[in-house]
Length: 231
Image 1 (cartoon, rainbow, N blue to C red):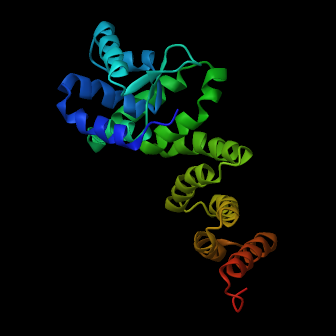
Image 2 (cartoon, one colour):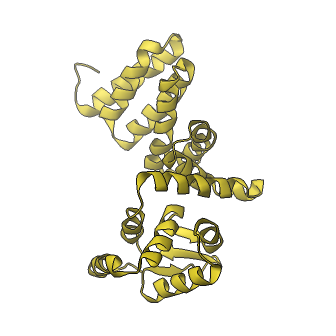
Image 3 (tube, rainbow, N blue to C red):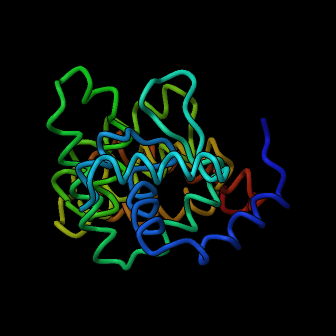
């Protein structure tokens, strides 16, 4: 059921009136995500389980949160804007530290469960900027996003991987990720972004096949932009 925008505005205006403890706990929950496991919240917050449960129950009563009817023990923020309002109460260093802690909790799950949380792992490690973990989780998350036709999400996962390889001057990896990211941007209709990616990768490219693919992507982007003289 869609939550009316007027109700969301009203709820967000009420947040500064909440007690510091409530704001702190719900801000920690916002780091976990729109949907969170209350067990994770017990680990993140420096309060007793009873206190946390009471505050979560109160937030459900106040329509800030709701119970997930499909997954026992999981709670939802009623809207992304409400989650974001709590999230912004945390400073940059605190956010990074909490994202790292959540990612570590997820990594300690069994392998099967960890696979189910591949997107969460990628997102948390991107937020806390741990390069080797971004490579480990963001790439499979990008491929999974492509399988699900979630192109924007795929681009969001490919982009920090590409940045990491650029910083480390890993030319072969830059070329490989650039091919994939450019194709995603072309499919999304973001032709200028595709051109930017390809033009940055071309000077590094030695393989004739890779050059041919990049020129094909450039021509496609220019054609879609109506720049026929370049295509």
